[in-house]
Image 1 (cartoon, rainbow, N blue to C red):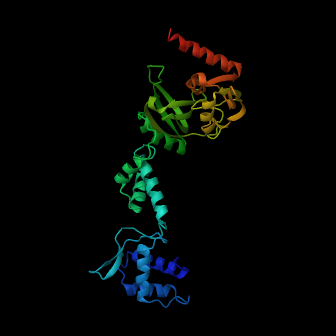
Image 2 (cartoon, helix red, strand yellow):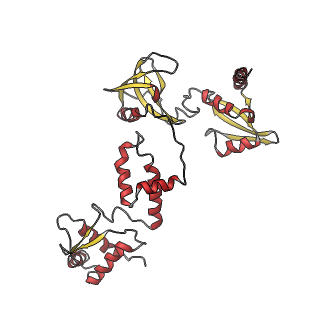
Image 3 (tube, rainbow, N blue to C red):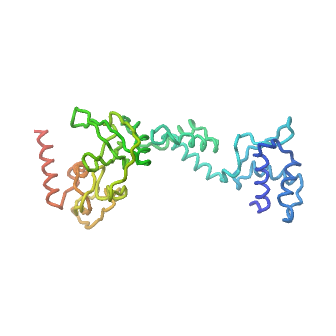
Amino acid sequence: MPANKYALLRYRIIDRCLTNKGKSFPSREDLREACADALYGSGADQISLSTIDKDIWAMKNESELGYYAPIEYNRTHKGYFYTEEDYSINELNLVDEDIEAIRFAAAILNQFRHVPLLSQYESAVDKIIQRVNLNSSIEEEKHKALIQFETSTVSQGNEFLGPLLEAAKSKTACTLFYQSFKESEVKQYTIHPLLLKEYLNRWYMVAFVPERDKILTFGLERIVSIETGKTKFIVPKGFSPQTFFKYSMGISESIGNPEKIELRFSTVAAKLVETQPLHSSQKKIKESKVGTDFQFELHPCQELYNFILSYGNEVEVLKPSSLRKEILRRLDLAMKNYK
């Protein structure tokens, strides 16, 4: 039976007594008096010891309440207490399905607890796991047998996630020592961190570089070291994290107006693209026996070229002609590797 409003009030009063550090181990009579005093004049102030017994049982066992309060009686002190330190019914009010959902989510979250960007929340994850009585190692292994996440072997540079995020939040300039894949020399940059972006399991920092008066993107795995300073900066006028990549794929910035791109996919490939859109601007414009045509508003970039080439003979570039020629050029170069 669902608890009435007076029962719910008594549960909170009992909880308050059990969490009162100044008066530990309240007896049944202490709990009865506390409830009677708090509810005096409400019409529910005539409370018996048997009512308190029923309330304690309900708090410990009633599935509709979802407390499953760890209440025990201490014979030495002749009073009740919570066996779990810092427990309170105010922190959770869950049914069995809620607890199982949290267990499932916590087991998943537990797999990512050591990711540098999330490590600062490790204690919060521990508290969630402990609160739902989750044996993390057992539950995690059980859920691993049911769900496999895409994992990355790229870890170099992830140690810079925390410092760069803090610099972006506090708008503090940094000195970056960076080695591009194209160069053997380590270069030094003064950067104003603006945005962290993940793409294909790699992290990138979008930052304004004052000496070049432009915004550049740096791959974290190519960072040699970072020196954080105290100099504050102002975000460049017109920069918006929400629109910087609006008409791009991956980490290529979108400057100026995008182009209308039309791609024709084979029947099977079209279903893949339709169920997992390439870009938010994607629109299906025509369907026929030869394939399905999609339109996009994008800036042609390396990531787009790679995507088109990855579909091989399952895709054809229809528009613009400049993109069609570029893909053809790259296919010709690829063919030379097999001659």
